[in-house]
Image (cartoon, rainbow, N blue to C red):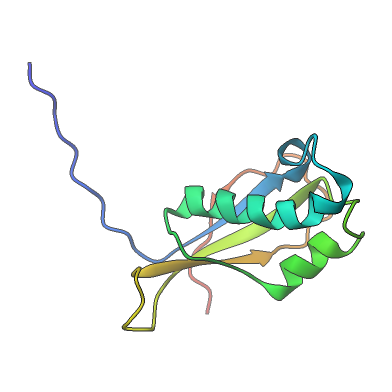
Length: 119
């Protein structure tokens, strides 16, 4: 019995909404490095979810992470990951991910969902 080889899926523009638990990702991190590491962890999460090397964090998300200071980073954050096509012809990669902040009242029973294209 030979192995069935799956065809490689081509990447396309996609939007996903996810909750990132920063608390477990920043455990045992020095106080003065928590907010910078939170940004790095968000980028790592987006890179893994959307399979793009180029990840860009929105200003609102950055302000939300830093809103309580360098030490007291929010425990969870809801983000929208938008895989976009690179406009620049000289770019090394064809796609990049734009990570934006989504304001929610409660994180209870929120799942990762694919968002349809918005007008």
